[in-house]
Figure 1 (cartoon, rainbow, N blue to C red):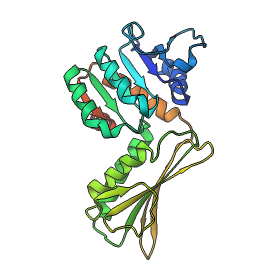
Figure 2 (figure 1 turned 120 degrees about the vertical axis):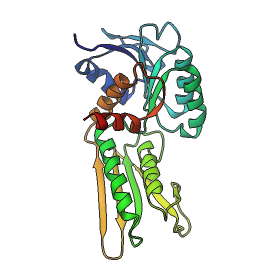
Figure 3 (figure 1 turned 45 degrees about the vertical axis):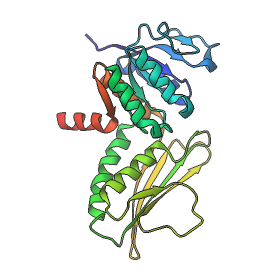
Length: 260
């Protein structure tokens, strides 16, 4: 029998629509859409609701949130209160990470979060971990991060860029913090600069460079469509279903790689 699971989509923007279109091919049924901006639309497979409640999540195993940074923590706490597992792809809420982690542990439910659920991006992260370990041994190379996204993105830097920054700082001893704002001064040696560009319809591009007087080495990931993000979020929903605890995409990737 083919694996089937019911999910709710919280937020029905570009990512929500892409997840909805891919879900059937991955054995996932979208039965509930939570977004006050789409209440006039009708779907054959899903009911549309303006908010979260016990009724709107009645037949749901996992909620997938791609809403807005200002609503993310509120949505997480409500979903946990209703006893559902959760995938959180919304970014911009990470300053409240400890609060969310404690709430997940108290709820005895499962939550997996990431700034980017693309499987390709997470393989890219593994490449960057290895590269940063190598460049840690050669102080003449100075790292930087550049990310580009469409002009409708609600936050900067991207969650993915922040995850990249964490990888580099964790593995390069001479870097201890990243700077994401505009610089009107000389950058300090221990600082890693993350620069953001918002323009046009770029799905997502992340560049990590290691620059020296002699040469530059660039490692780049470019997303062609949102399909990779959507498929990864659906895989994460299947992975988190029935698990208990607070997980990042790194936990899922480690589990999948170890099993391969």
